[in-house]
Length: 123
Picture 1 (cartoon, helix red, strand yellow):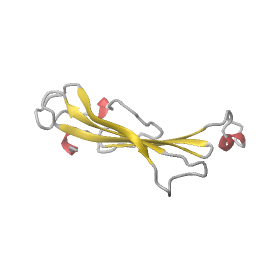
Picture 2: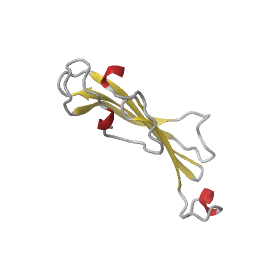
Picture 3: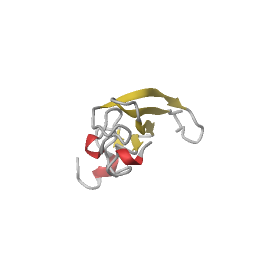
């Protein structure tokens, strides 16, 4: 991971969680070749992690996706991207951590009406 390639290291992206792609507004340019060419995604891996502490009563799994943002000109690794998804009870939980794309997390109800918003009168 290269701090010199990004404008802001791990910017706060709020509820934005990218499973793929790149946050190009934060790309300063490659620190190795000094070019601002399109970024390639390489070494993409996906799978599930079953850890007893993270499993819910239904035996839920966490999906983990990782890949590298790489300069298409010289092959320099700009950042490592990590995205997770899991179902935790009545909610889908998303999170993202990446020096280029930033960090973000979100939680969405699997029910038609989110129980957290019912009391607020928001649908």
